[in-house]
Amino acid sequence: MTVRELSELQAFWNIHPWGSYADDLRAARLCATVANFSAAVDWKRRGRRPFEPKDFLPTYSQTQSQQTPEQQIAALKMLPGVDLRKKPKKNKGRK
Image (cartoon, rainbow, N blue to C red):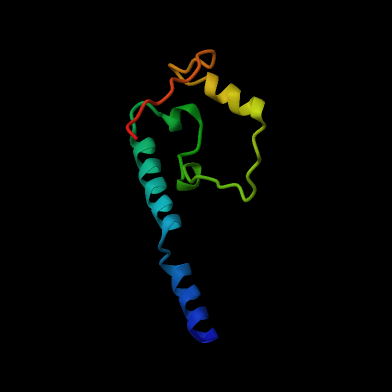
């Protein structure tokens, strides 16, 4: 791919994005439309601004933090049906 082809592709993507970002943007537009026309959200009477797609776009962190073992155990304890005091059963599978 030449530099010219790459720059044309970038310009085209700026006008008509594709991929996961475009999917997120489509879903955010739909969410904003539904929220703005919902009877439960009377934003005019409450003095709020209408929802915009950016209110529903996910934000992705560039860095992922490493969980400590204590944080992992705390997260497991929050799951329903998880009892960390029980020892796991040994798998008696076929050989």
